[in-house]
Amino acid sequence: MLHRSSVATPPRAIRGEGIYIFDENGKSYLDACGGAAVSCLGHSDADVRAAMHAQIDQIAYAHSGFFSSDAMEELADDLIAHAPDGMDKVYFVSGGSEATEAALKMARQYYLEIGQPDRKYVIARRQSYHGNTLGALSVGGNMWRRQQFEPLLITATHIAPVYQYRDQRDGETEAEYGLRVANELETAILELGAQNVAAFVAEPVVGATSGAVAPVPGYFKRVREICDQYGVLLILDEVMCGMGRTGTLHAIEQEGISGDIQTIAKGLGAGYQPIGAVLVSKKINDAIANGSGFFQHGHTYQGHATACAAALATQRAIRERDLLSNVVKQGENLADGLRAKLGQHPFVGDIRGRGLFRGVELVANREIKDPFDPNMNINAKIKKAAFARGLMAYPMGGTIDGVRGDHVLFAPAFIVTEDDVAKIVDLFAAALDDVFVAEG
Ligand code: PLP
Image (tube, rainbow, N blue to C red; front, top):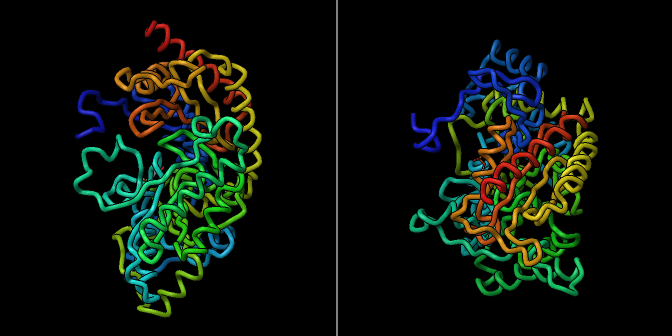
């Protein structure tokens, strides 16, 4: 088999129990990152498993070109009942990259339906990740992921992300900073010609590329204003930060606006089944419904009944067990624990995030925020050291310009306890010691 790495074969995951995964040798791993911010209910949820079994016993899958299903319809109704303002319909896919592709094509088709065919450009942000398929990779701003595929990518314009730790200027208030970076969107729209721009894509809280970087207050309000002024669609990518991860069901709720199109995945099905979705506003749906009547897209497994059943059970579990309260509470515990233990660590530059979505940025020099030389592979060494100690943490390089900088992301399941959080902090601190003592 071709693994992600051709030089190392990972251990086999044999069994899951709560927030732990066990390998073939019986070694346990505390999953402090939910894989990649996916496993929000842990690895052995009885209700989700029962819902999947019940669905499979009736029918596992029926092609969505022929049939709908109870699971698909009920999940769509459930998602819309709790969606940000203005969202009207749900389009199912099988994961995050597929959701981005569908969102981009939907934005393009919307403008064709309303007679503005020149609108084709997409603006996105540097230090963003929207998926690994070619369209999604094109709008993503992570150079490390893009570099070798550049010749295959479609044109997208990239503007500054919100990255307060590094980019807020001395003497500048949060509000001024937010306004300054949001206004880069207006500049980009004007340079491309508003009549040519289809959409702006952004993660409300940036995940994989920068490590749980939240926006400053007011940033997304200004972005919404600019999009409305120039008729540009706002696509929010909540594949990683959504579905409760930041303490509200949708991360954008904390910014007081809604997008025109919003992608969700990961926590939607908690990893029990691969599933993603695109939330579609009434404006977009009406244009397609009253125009061609057909969204020119589709995948074989979209609306997979077993995946929808798993997602519906996941969403009900989150609500019925009031897990978002635990996300907020344990998220604060995690941030406090990391700050108490590592706030003065010579190589920890920033500890940030919201809810159970927390990032730690590693730096070679705290005073000048100097990143480590990328060739040192600090984030990979931390992952290895943590894994050896039985801790799964999600490390990434390319935090700063897609090439330099290291961070570690924590995204444990919403069921974590205070003891689990304390264990995460202790194991992580020990792993940092392992790496930095070895590095001298
Ligand atoms: N969008 C965001 C914000 C992501 O973090 C990811 C994956 O990490 C994706 C899209 C792509 O999702 P997938 O890996 O399910 O294709």
